[in-house]
Each structure stands twice: as structure tokens, then as C-alpha cells.
Image (cartoon, rainbow, N blue to C red):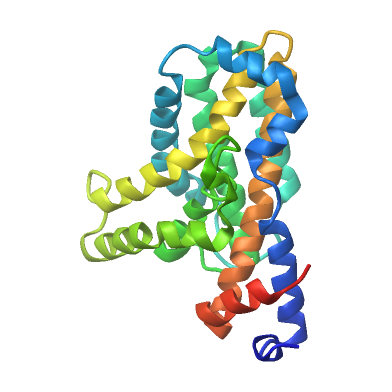
Length: 266
């Protein structure tokens, strides 16, 4: 046992191993590609030109509006068990409805499904003992959507959990500092917009995969429901791992948790 592992209580070490097993899952786009295969490639060919930019724009707007609404509808901030199954049912239903309608539903369905996913992420954060009324926890909820969002056609697909957090660290810090000092005001704080744009650029990659599946007539509603279920399952796993890590960081410090994480063999 290394010196770092010896610092951890047995229960915390087990939790860290659980977190690592969740955060090292295959990326969301890989799961979608494995499930839909060639029909997905056909769907990409059916998408209009500049569709990636349109998806990124809608995604950014959905993230900007979704988190606060999601948390406001949750009631108390005290810790209790998360209701993962309920959020899976809700987001699957949203996907089925959107898939039946087709691409034109994206403008309505994406904000709804994103809000449900963010609500589930916040619910998991609360279940891990975090106070979801705190700004830092809200920003951590947004961070979750950046995990597993790299495209398998991109070199960044190899990015791990800690690399993504490091890439987001400056934007998260600047957003937190600005909002703490000046608040949000009538318009969202510029540093928050930059953070959301960064996260949206990763999250929109997997959204584009969903849109491509919906573009194939033979997939339709089934694709919408199935992919939304996969979305929720994936980000619930990411959220569980992330907020276990954040809980352990409060106790042991980030440096020790990161080093112990890297030393763990699962």
C-alpha cells in the first residue's frame, strides 16, 4: 500500500474506487456509436449544413437557463437519497416525444431534457452531502456535463477526468469570483457565459450524435427515448463519481485525492 492510500479511511478508499470506476467509463459518444452504428453515420449525412453550430447555440442557451430552474424546483437543500429512476423516466419520455416529431423538436426538447439532466445531477450532489444552494456546488453541477463529451473522432477523446477539470478550472474560478463580487444582475455574468460556452462545446458533441440518430426515419421515437436514457444514465454516473470526489476533497485535499485516485487499480 502506498503512503497516499494509507492516509485514507477504508470506507473513503472504497468510495474513491467507486468514483474512479464510474468516471473511467467509455465516453457517451462511444456508447451511442456502438448502439446505432451505421444508421448513425447515415444520420450525420442527413443533417443540414452548419448544424453543429446551431446545436452548440441551443445547448448553450439551455445550460444558461436550466441549472437555476432545476435547483429551484428541488425544494430543500438538505442531503437525502437521489431519485435517479424518476429522472430517467422523465428524460426518456421527453426523448420519445422529441424523436417522434423529428429534428424540429430540438428547440423545445433539448432545453427540457437538459434541465431534467441538470436536476438529476444536482439531486445526486445533494445526496452526496453537498449544499446545492452554494455557488461552487452549482458550478460543479455544470462541470459534470463536460465529462465524457469529447468526440471519438477527436484526439481529446482520451482526456481523463482530472484533465477536463484542469481545463475548466480557470473558467470556473473566474465565474465564481465574478458572481460572488457582482452577482448575476439582469444579464448573466460574462465569466459565467464563457464557462457555459466551454462546457456547451463539449456537451453539444453528444447532442449532435442524438440529433443524427433522430434524423434517420427508421429510428425516430425509439432513438430519442433510448439516447435520452443513455444520456441520463451516463451523466448520473459522472455526477456520482464527481461528487464523491468533491466530498473526499473536503476531507483530504485535492492533491492527495488526485494522487490516490491515480494510484488506485480497479
